[in-house]
Length: 423
Image 1 (tube, rainbow, N blue to C red):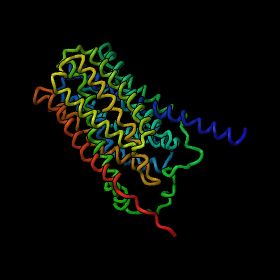
Image 2 (image 1 turned 45 degrees about the vertical axis):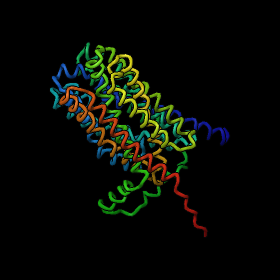
Image 3 (image 1 turned 180 degrees about the vertical axis):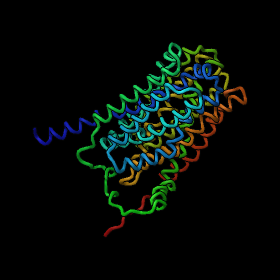
Image 4 (image 1 turned 30 degrees about the vertical axis):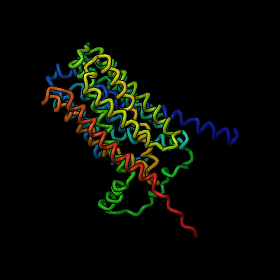
C-alpha cells in the first residue's frame, strides 16, 4: 500500500471517530434528556412541583461546574479514549444504582453522580473531533457531533414516557444505564488519536511545563476568562443554554396546561423540537464553515431568532396549539442548534495546547445557567401560575447578551490588525 493510500485510509477513519463521539454523547445524555418528557409522570408518581422537577435536571448539571474544568485538564494530559470512556461508565453504573433507590432525595443524589461522569463526555468528544478535522470541515463535524445530545433527547422523549407509563419510572433508569454503557464501550473500542498531531491545539509542549503551585496553575488557566473572545463566548453560551434548558423542562407542561394538548402528543412535540435542534446543530455549523463573517455571526443569528420565538410564546399566538407547536420547533432549531457553531468557535479560539481546558472552562461557566435555569423557571411558574414570566426572563437574558456581544463583535471587526514585527 502506498503512503498516499495509507494516509487517505487513515484520515477516512475520522468519520468513524465522529460517529462514536456522537453516539457516546447521545447515549450518556439519554436519560437526563428525557426527564422533561417524563415530567407529567414524575410529577404524578413522586408528587413533585414544577420547581422540584427542574431540580432533577439541575442535579445532573451541578457537578460539571467543577467537573468540566477537571475533565478539560485531564483531556490535555491523557488519552481521550479513557477519559471519555470511564466517564460514560460512571453514568451507566450510577443510573443502574438509581433504578433501585427509593424516593426523590435518592434520585437527586444519583443524578449528581451522573453529572460527574458526563463531565468528561461533553468536552472529550469535542476535543476528539476537533483534532481529527481541519478548519474546512470542523464546523460541520462539530455540528454533527453536538447533534448527539438532541438526538439522544429525541429518542428519550419518544421512548422513556412510554416506558414510564407502562412499567414505571424506575425502568427508565435501567434503560438509560444500558444505553450509556453501549456508548462507553463503543468509544473505548473504536477511538484512537490522529496519527500525526498536526493541529496547534494538539501540541503536547505544555506537558513539559515545570510544576507550579496549585494557585498559580489555576490562576494561569482562569486568565482565559479575561480574554474578550472568552467573555463573548460565555455571555452567549449562558443565555442560550438557559433557553435550551427551559425548552427541555417546560415544553410538555406548557402544551398540556396552556394549549390543552394531551401528554402523549405533547411529548411528541418535544421529540420534534429535539429533532429540530439536532438538524440545527448540523446546518448552522455547516453554515459557519462557509460564512465569510465568521462562526460567531451564526451564534448572533440564533440569539435573534430565540428572542423572537420566546416573545411570540407570550402573545396570544402562544395559546394556539398549532402555533405553539411550531414555535417550539423554531426554538429547537435555533435554541438548541446554536451549540454547533458555538463550540467550534470555542475550539478555534483556544490557546495552543489548551483546547481541552478552554472547552471545559467555557462549558463549566455556561453550566451555571444549566444548573440554575430549570428550578428558577419552574419556581417562576409555581409562584405566578403562568409560563409567561419564564419565557419573558429567557427573552430578556438573550436580548441583553445579544446587544453586548454584537457590539463587541463589531468593535473587533473594525479594529485594525496589528502589523507583525520583522526581524
